[in-house]
Length: 381
Image 1 (spheres, rainbow, N blue to C red):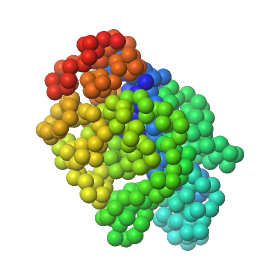
Image 2: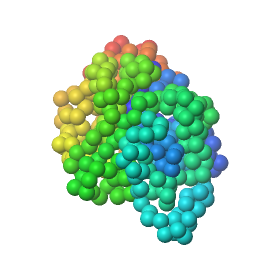
Image 3: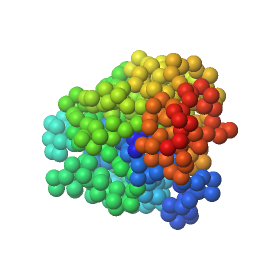
Image 4: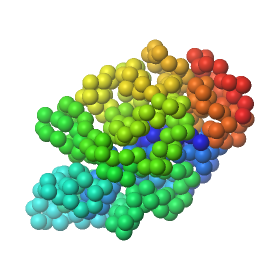
């Protein structure tokens, strides 16, 4: 078994190893064989700090990216929402707002409402008037189902399991917690939820600090605790707002120090692949670079770096082209992760490798593993 920490698009791209037909169904890629890690051996701990309640519906963007991609319906052009979705409800919300002269943009519910109602949505409740996040019609049905299950008394973990079954998901998708945690960005313009900062304000406000509100009172679920006892891969996700909320939960960093962990840098030296990671890292006092990620990830036993990244680290490094633009790229980077995990002590027999005798069989000319320790027993299972 192997566990991925997932948020944003970096880790979901690493997990995405299947091509799509024109009908969006899952098909085998011509460029890849079986996935590196057998799907039934993969757990994904998803960030829920980005979740919001919008118009009374709980939206879990990072969970849904993994859910939709694993279910073969993700819009891979945007890496959010469902491919080919319609937006009739969203369009009508804007028509009504225009006709009624209602103010658009993020509309927080009153402060008293932020801690009322369903607990999981604390500190991140927005009105649905002219909703500031574009929600497709089929996408909205997922949020209706999730919210209704929670209102019926189910946990977020249980609701996610129901949705995973509905989308025929092979991997085990786990919300980081069933308790509320909200990622709040502190800026000169005031506090704002991450989605307001990123979606509505396009990451323009200067970041002064990042708060994971509620994290100290929240708990990782028993399922997450179990998953963190397996070897862990931290994909090329934003270290602050995608991985940070998971790490902020009590006991998570301690668990990461106790198990083999490999992290893929979301930077090439000082250049980020995408997103607001540099501004967010500067905002929390971290250097926006691969070296800064290594400082933040003190629990990581090894790193996968881009082959153009000449950063010298104090831990084992494997290098390859870490840009992930399709299934063949994801397969290559996943192979590098498997090699690194085995080299830093993850038992090869427990990694759930698909169709190979062991990690050593995953090496190739497209991966430079010369700086890794020798894989025990040659990597043979």
